[in-house]
Length: 306
Image (cartoon, rainbow, N blue to C red):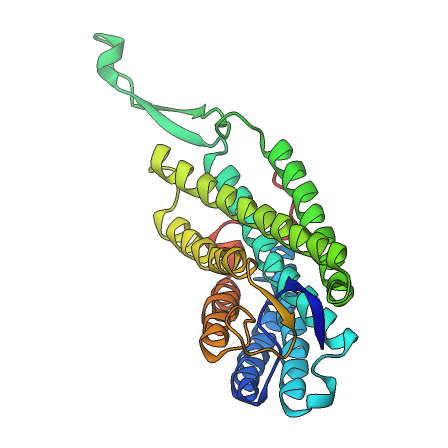
């Protein structure tokens, strides 16, 4: 489908026959994570709402790549309104699910690690001059630390509001994408919404990463180093799709099926899409599902911090 004006090139391009193999591979990869995701939600030892976004995302991606594989094999459905809009919405919102989970885990992990605990103070006998007493033990509470000028609750509420805005912007931009092909004004709105949604998600990722790194650098004796670095690695990986999207969204085309530079349909553009958008999404989600967040990060069953 072509247009007289330029409109945003579809993220991931339009599926052609050469897209069938990578679509099938990622369908299988996500299918392999589903049993793990289901087990995490069933097993009482690892069950936590902290996984819910990633679990839902993994199931959704199977449908997304099944659609992409079907489009690659059937030219008549490649440029239909439903499938084009579906995939553009899916790519705009998918990585937000894992971002949401990692954002919650990072906040709860830091709050729990810096929360007030107790330590033992031994009072030596020499402190009592000539009197001989056995060493006394006294529990002294540690005062809870605040997170660099903001409380856990205010951070949580702000995060929720921003996530809802990103979801709304991503959903609407995907729904309007097909209309933007024939309407230049709508095309500009779609591009602006895509940028806004992705910038919000990247901001949330950076905030979560900052919280963990801040706690690790300022309170190294109270933050478990291994879990903190593992959490940082997942956050860095899920940031890759955000950066890729911000770079790719500047491209425009006049036809969904165009192979011209900037259409995102060329072999190099597709390779970048799978390696910088899809692969990091899968890897960060698989890393999260691979660990028991209750044991590794001390995250409770629900999402409320204590």
